[in-house]
Structure formats: C-alpha cells, structure tokens
Image 1 (cartoon, rainbow, N blue to C red):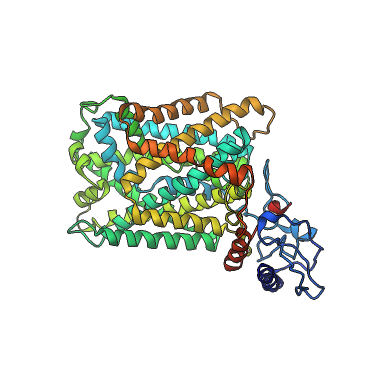
Image 2: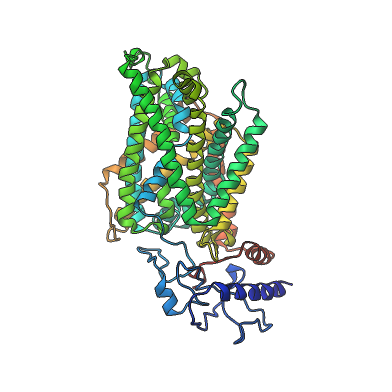
Length: 558
C-alpha cells in the first residue's frame, strides 16, 4: 500500500514539476536514499517522466516558481540561478528547496518592533505598578527591561551571525552543549513557549476586538475565544501562503501600531502642556523593594518587551545577516523602549496610579477619558497591535520547528518546505494547532506566568552558550562580537529572575515548568539518542506530504 501511494505521489509531483520548472535541463539525481525522510524526493523514472512501477520516490532539488530557478533534480545552472546565497556555518547554500533570503533591514526592524509592541504595553503597566508600588520604581523597571532586552539581543546578534541557520537558541545549544539541551529547548519551546505566546496575544486580540463593539459589559468569553481562534487561522494562512506576504503584513501592521502609539504619546504631550503633571510628583513614594516583587515586576515588564530575540529565528531568511541582524536590533529595541517610556508618561497625565492599578485595560481607560467619541480607536489600536505581534510570533515559531526537525529532534515532516511557496508549512500548522488548544482551554494570566518563568531559563542558557563558545571555539568566525560583560550581566539577571520568585513567592506553576522541561528526556533517550522509529510513521509522512505538497530540503537527504 505504501509503495502504491509513493508511486501515485511521484507521478503527481512530476506533473507539477513540469508545469512549474523554468530550467530546461535535468540530471540523474541522487539515488542514495535515507530512511528518515518518508518519501525520498529523487528521480527514478523513465525518459518520458512517468513512474516505471518500481516505487520511485521524489527528490526535489530544483523547483521553480519564477523566484529561485528550477529544474527537476537541480542542474548546476538552476542552482546558480537562485538569488539567495546562505552564509556561515550550518548554511544550506547548495539547496534549491530551502527558506529564501527575503528579510531586509526594514523588514527586520518591523519584525522586532511589530513583535515586541503587542498587548503588553496596553495591559502590563497596571500589574507592574502594583508590584513596584510607585511610579518612579515602575519607570526604573520599564527602562531596565528595555536595557536588558537590548543587551540580550546584542548577545544574540553575535550568536546569530556565528550560526546563520534558523532556530535561534536551538542552534546555539547544539553548538555549545550538544544534542540533549538543544532537544529540551525545542521540546519546551515547541509545545509550550511559542504556542502559549501566540495564544496569549490572540486572546488579547479577541478581547479588544470584541470590546470595540461591546462597550456596556464584559465581553462574553466564548465570543472572545472564537475571535482569537479566527485570528490564529488567518495568521496561519498568511504565513503558509508566502514569506513575502507575511513580512508585508508585518510591515503594514507595524506602521499602523506605531501610528496608534503616536496617538497615545501625542495625547499625553497635550495633557502635559495643559499642566496635568500632578501624578508625576513624588515618584518613589510607596516603593516596594522585596526580591519577589521586583522579580515578578520584571516578568510583567519583560512580557511587554518579549520578542526581542525573534529575528534570530529567521536568520536563514535575512539578507546579509552579519550586517542586518545587529542593525535591526540596535534600531528596533531602543525605538520600542522610548515608545514605552512616553506611553507610560501619557497614561499618568489622565489617570492616577491607583486608577491605573485597578484598570483591566489601561489603554482603553486612557482612550475613554481623552478621545471622547473617538474612544473606539484604542480597542482598535490594541487589536491592530496584537494581530501584528501574533503574526511575527508565528513567523518565528515555524522556523524553530523547521530547524529542530531538520536535526532529527522533532517529527521529520515538521522540517519540510512547501514545494512552491518555500514556507515551512507543517511547522506553522503544528504550532497553530497547539496555540488554538491553549486559546480554548487557557487564560491570559495563567499562560503568562508559565511562559515567563520558562522563557528566562532558556534566555540564560543562551548567554551561557555564548560564554562557553568563547573558550571552546575561540577561532570560530564572529562577524559581530560583543564585550563578554554583556552576556555575563544578562546571565546573572536571568538567574535572579528564575530564583527570586521561587525563594520569595513560590508557586506550583514553577514546579510544573521545571518538571515539564526535564520530562523531555523521556522522549529524547529512545527517539533521538537511540533513534527508535515507530513503524507506521513513514506512511504517515508520505500521506502528509501528499496533502500539504511539501518536501524535505536537500540538506536533509545528503
């Protein structure tokens, strides 16, 4: 039965290849099959292009849609025609089916800004102010979160230019520590971190989208969840359809949300000129200095900044990453930090600290008091902001699946790429399904607590990886290099953010997070270390390839 499916699938894709290929040449292809990849995308057919009945599989080394050359099994001419040359260790320079370099400097900045400015700045100020107890300390935490994000991102820039393959922390853990820590990261990130991040953002999207129409009472939970699920589906479609479309959506929504941010800042500036500065006096009165409160205040603030590392997940798609990766970071993160500071000042021109603390949606309260009949603009602005942030989150998450699966740490199908769109469709769909389940069964607060604690374990691990490789790989090419003090500072702060809440305010969620991460070893030992394979998985892979029209990159088959 499996051979029959392969034969049918082979003939089907050969016909598609004839229609899409732009190159006139064919070569014999590589018949060295590897059993891990389901269908082997190799040419074993007669001269007329039909299956010869021997169970021929397919290997697509050159599929053209006008963007990267083409030809069956990739002649030298078609390979040379591809416009996107990969650079650095771990690159896949000779592949024709691979992720294309289409993310430039502007798109890189837009991805950082668009992912970071989500629901956090419109919701987090109340929680952060409550934990710090004073306006002054809350501003210190906001600025410290921005500085920490910038330092962390600069350290990530060194890591990202050392290894330009997709996957961010996964790739860095592989280089520094080997397979087990890299697998644990991909395990936790694929099943918890990225899906929960997207679920939080989409739930926020649903809440504010509904609030734009339901103003007299709390939005019905079921309606909010349905709107959030709709957002997941739309964002999934955009990212599966085209990398260019996904980055274009990111650019447009980033511009739109910056307009919304400017409206808030302009309103606050107007109020300051009117003399509404009474809430800015005695800024440090009532400050709380407990270890647990400061650490959890950082959690709240850092949620608003989260996304500072997302560009590292798509380094295989960045044009000239050794230049554009650090430049995007240096432009994007300070821009977000300045915006956040000005937005917080603007909030305090129309609300007292106590009113901010009791407000469930600070931006909506601000709009109601300042914009009058135009108050509906604020829920709309938050909706735009969260949609763009969710789009950037899924864009990065799909690449993590792609990178981890390519190394054999996740299901093979998750590293396959659409044969015409060049998008990692299976990884995107996988993440979206988990995010949809979290939307249905989770809440924003519970997901944020679980996410923040787990995320900073791995952020600290990435800093340790950079420090370790300074000594274990001193001659490794580093197009961009940061002073060693930067990863050291971020590592120490990460340790504080992990240990502080456990000591001062321990909760069961932290234990669950630790057990879940370590529980990944139950799957690593048999399925990765000992390479145990489930017999029917090859048939499942074949079926999914037929449904989604995806193929492994050539690197996986070599």
